[in-house]
Image (cartoon, rainbow, N blue to C red):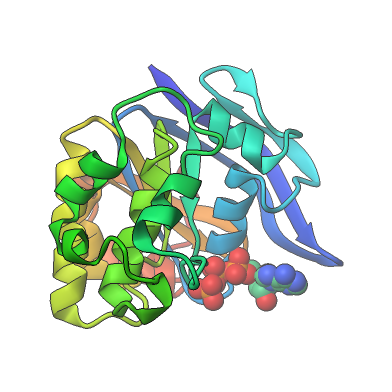
Length: 238
Ligand code: ATP
């Protein structure tokens, strides 16, 4: 079943076209790694899927429903959840309070505070601590848990490893592995190519707002992805 279908999407920041005529289809259960240099348009694309940025033209369909013009909280109800770069937690609130906030526009489903804590056991002891006092890894786990509380069909992760030590990044990705067993579709931005290649089933490389490589991970080499990253791979494949 097709999950997400983006067609001819343009997104502008003022005069700047950050996403250009971009089309992408993501199937249920896929893990798509969005790869590209700084400024390639990855965050803008994720934000436009989640409703943070408005499309200038084009369309975004979730399971056939046109969600292009609807506000972000309605997209959460439709099944999309974004973990933004920088986490954006309420630092004066506890882990548990932040998690409960994630269920405000929730769909019915599996995720409860207890089920999130089962996936992120490092949060159990600190569930009543203010998130501003947590380590980077604990904050990231809380941010992912908060997104899960809406019971998303598609989880969108923007640079979850940013600012974390390699050990903590391993812990975060170990937890994500358990999510993959639940058939959640994941779209993620990950700067560490080795990790992206390990966790994702598909590589989508962006350059200057466009997709220049879109391939099953099993059918693409590290060199091809690196070439696309630096703009050496000129063939467009969608
Ligand atoms: P990074 O890894 O640096 O976050 P990215 O691939 O996610 O890069 P975007 O953040 O989507 O890229 O940025 C795409 C382009 O849009 C860049 O040229 C950036 O400067 C510009 N841009 C992003 N956000 C805004 C904004 N709020 N206002 C104006 N320009 C923006």
